[in-house]
Length: 275
Ligand code: OAD
Image (cartoon, rainbow, N blue to C red; front, side, top):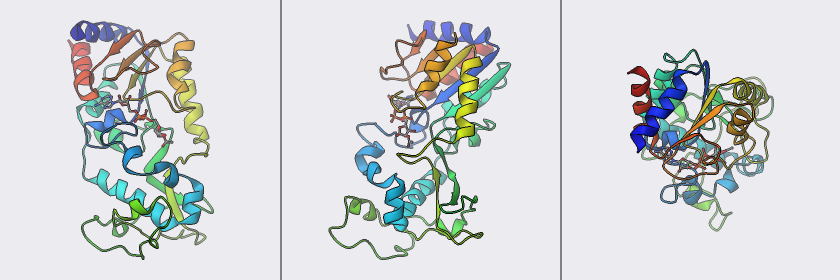
């Protein structure tokens, strides 16, 4: 029974000194943010992300790539953290030490109250200069909803690359220029072929190697090196608890598998911890 598994997970967490929560796109799904591999609304299905989320794509057409990320960032301004994010924030007050590690580029953990989550894949809210890497502040003026102002630059010529469909979302925005060097500002996310932020990855691996319990939530566990984190924790003797309505390669690693959604399982887990 799921309630027994919640109780088992709470018993394990109650004895933990150091806890890591490791999250993927699934924890934001109930906020209305599409996951990457969800067959119905997955970002991979609707956009040719492989064609857009690369340094080459940005070099080839900065306005299209910046416009797509601004569209995603705008969408995020319209959604809210869900009870899963809220429960992760509440967990920090129920265990001695909690480290949140996320693969997500949204800011929903922060908005739910989690302090300094480690973003292994960067953040939509940390743009930087593509030339000198200086952090950039994105003025809200560049964030216009798709329904309002027309594209600020001409749509790509007909029959252009496989990303033409994305332009049909009506969004191409010339990226802002860096105030320091004039270079084009780029999204602060990790693109395919790029290394993960060294400090975040190092801190995450250390936290995983030192924790007693790692709670993995809403990740398919397929994309490395981030997917290594739960495996590092298990290798160093931590108990892994998984929250995911679907089976994943982490099922065999987990000592407890909660096959429920994040917004169902996490509040129930926090409630069991408090009882
Ligand atoms: P995926 O889309 O690969 O996996 C999402 C997982 O969440 C799946 O296992 C779903 O079963 C699960 N899920 C869906 N709804 C859920 C819910 N309500 N509650 C809990 N789980 C739910 O997303 P990630 O594993 O995060 O990297 O993908 C990892 C990385 O792959 C992303 O960070 C991205 C992508 O390449 C970069 O962009 C660098």
